[in-house]
Length: 149
Ligand SMILES: [Fe+2]
Ligand SMILES: [Fe+2]
Image 1: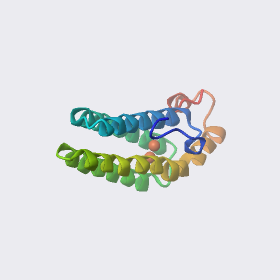
Image 2 (image 1 turned 120 degrees about the vertical axis):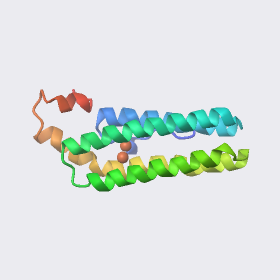
Image 3 (image 1 turned 180 degrees about the vertical axis):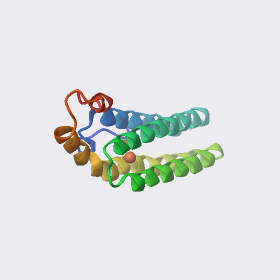
Image 4 (image 1 turned 135 degrees about the horizontal axis):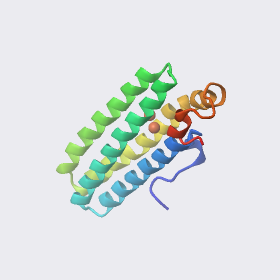
């Protein structure tokens, strides 16, 4: 059983975003394993991979929200920026953290990544799905972008 398991309540109903969210959880799980094994090198490598993954995912998600002119885009972008800033702080702390401290950091950030999906991303799910249903023609490249084909 992984540290963070996917559950249906994390589903936005937008295939490409859901696929990216699953990869995010995989990164957190690798981070958790590295912390449990007290492997600082692997911990920092996993943290860099998570941050890189989140940067790319957030850029993608903001592009999607921009395309459908989602009203909450700026607020959502702000949340993404604060997550990246916070992870940067955690990354710095990890460099000198003891094993229990590293575990504590991972235990703090794991649920917090999941909460962003569950509470913030699920807010725009219905709007994107509605847009796909009502406004996007069948051959719209946007469908391909979000995996709705
Ligand atoms: Fe988001
Ligand atoms: Fe997301």
